[in-house]
Image (cartoon, rainbow, N blue to C red):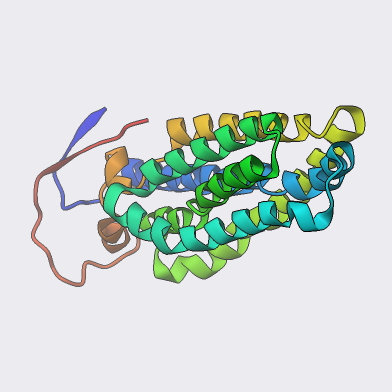
Length: 239
């Protein structure tokens, strides 16, 4: 709905409620997103001893696989943030998440250490898109004064994601094979990706709301220190 405003980015109760609702929504979706990344990150450590035994490989031979992942993950940290600044966090996250899903679906089909290393390297690069672009999104929705408290709660995602993802991979292997420990988490991450795609917005303006700066300046209880003149403006509340 489009609502004509007769005051400065002025925040009556409806707009305040809408902004707060979107912030809760973004918090939950971004929490789920980053926890979901671990589904396709922690499964390898659980599956490695099993496929080593099945394929007759030793630790020295498969070392290149995890080294490829870690190298590409570290390298990706340097480029994922700038790419998010240039093209938008939403777009980079979707690309990275999709690559991680594909890499995990294909990994069990690989029959050589080299091919596994390539796929795991792609997974590492894809996984590196999560943290910097999640932080960028959160910073667009929460002010500096709120971020300490907010990040304390939001940061539980990687702890819980780690534990749940490791346990899930172990559980899957207990009744299936190591291959399902890649396929099933990949499907789970794909579902998380759909939730993210449908519900996330990079910034308040993308949801038809005023910017975070305007909201904080004119939210209920805030004083208009700049004595800004009243202006007529329209904002669109979107889903």
